[in-house]
Amino acid sequence: MVIAGFGCRADATVASFRSALAATGVRPDGLAVPEDRAALIAGFAEGEGLSVTAITADQLSGIDTPTQSDLSLTHRGVGSVAEAVALAAAGPGARIIVARVISSDCMATCAIAQGLRV
Image (cartoon, one colour):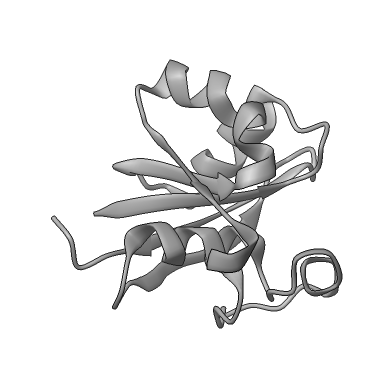
């Protein structure tokens, strides 16, 4: 299972998500975002034909990420929201295969996790 995890600002757009995902060069099996951002990505997910896993704050707690953003640490308590939600959605034993990248408008980040589930 390959999951694209997203972190984003409240005013991110479909173009923001498209740009961030394109920068990874990967076609995922599904998407993941923090629970309070699920509505923002719904249109993008529908257009891509992908499901969205909404990750709760409790699920993010304690996830170590390869990269660190002061903004993510301050607001979400994780080094990278995109990496953390991707890892949470991909399940136990998942690993980051593409570290977070930033959309061209700087409104969204995306990271790719590979899970053990098929």
